[in-house]
Amino acid sequence: MRLSRAFLPTLKETPAEAQIASHRLMLRAGMVRQTSAGIYVWLPLGWRVLQKVEQIVREEQDATGAQEILMPTIQPADLWKQSGRHDAYGPEMLRLKDRHEREMLYGPTNEEMVTDIFRSYAKSYRDLPRNLYHIQWKFRDEIRPRFGVMRGREFLMKDAYSFDLDYAGARRSYQRMFVAYLRTFARMGLKAIPMQADTGPIGGDLSHEFLILAETGESQVYLHRDLLAFDVLSQTVDYDGDLSPIVDFWTSRYAATDEKHDAAAWAAIPAADQVSARGIEIGHIFYFGTKYSAPMGLQVSGPDGKMVTPEMGSYGIGVSRLVGAIIEANHDEQGIRWPEPVAPFRLAVLNLKPGDAGADALAERLYAAFDPDAVYDDREDRAGVKFADADLMGYPWQAIIGPRGAAAGRVELKRRATGERAELSLEDAIARIRGG
Ligand code: P5A
Image 1 (cartoon, helix red, strand yellow):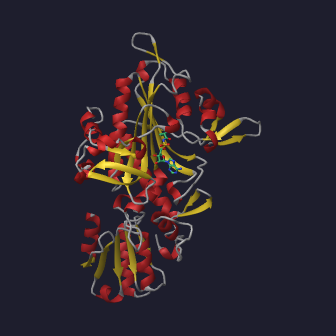
Image 2: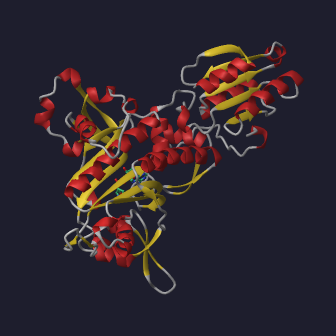
Image 3: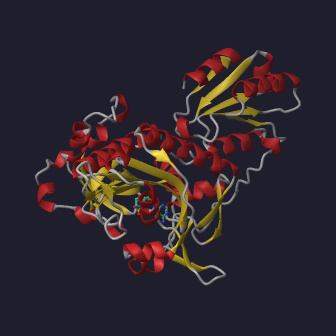
């Protein structure tokens, strides 16, 4: 993308309403713009990141055998009356009426709808186990939307729903999602820690929140230091095999949010291994048995012909929140430092003198080698503006090309994460960027 033709509306001033770094940086870099309290438009740069995050989530869900669908945002209130949650959900739910006075709502979550879909088709034990997920906008009329996309009213969630014949099956489904979540967040460069959690309005008696540590997090968390040292991606995972060893590793060491904190268990951990910090919740998984299947009359015939009520779980990831969380974990004074897998573009080519034949030719060649995963700063701006914008927007690589270097066939390559710089030939620069 050529910046001279791009819609990248950066802000010069730090917006006064933004209290945390990720919110400030997302506004300054022109990633999002608020249209109502807690509701945002995703501008080109932000939209690219959101799609990259979404795609990693999708790949890791698919790897578990879960299948993607797309349920609507608007739901009939009747389904929620069947489960008993219509009144219980309270003022966080946006309730609507259509022209025929039928009660509708903008979905804050989809347990009821997916149970309705599944009960329409699943007839026998052979139709189980299944896991259906979608990545769809949700609405929760949060009393205090804040921190930008971190706590929005409209937000993008990945929500998966598992159906199993019995408790043992439901546990396996839960473990699959548990492991997939570890992998998903690790691929984005995040160290997410699963912690025992309360189940709130989703319900059930087994639940883990996945949190990353960040000073601006809304939760207070307590954990054993060893959990931060573990490299999740070094393990290969067989989703049809026994996942208990992986899950047991994580659940046998202490990690809890404030609500579940156990002072006695905590005191038993040597002080040098205790980490108490703030955390951001980026995912939440639940096992709730027959909480929805029973009242909604979902039943299948079992192997012995008797009717069985399937056991369910649901598994959420805050996809739009993740964009903010990734920035909280990866920024400095100058701006964002995107981990490569979620960067809006891998490379920014900064032409310090557009119009200079040598600089133009070299910049065009480098840009062509990485297009469409590169931006080309071909604007008639001062070098300082280009450096500042590239640092702000946080592309992992910057290639700086001026007339003098170009005459010698040299590119100055800068790595955003470390600030390292090297003078390279075009070929070496391309190889270095490709190498990661
Ligand atoms: C699990 C999937 C559920 O809704 N039902 C379907 C279950 N869980 S949850 O914990 O309430 O939400 C899942 C994840 O969504 C993100 N999230 C939010 N992101 C931005 N703004 C919000 N207001 C918001 N509320 C929830 C969180 O990442 C949460 O873990």
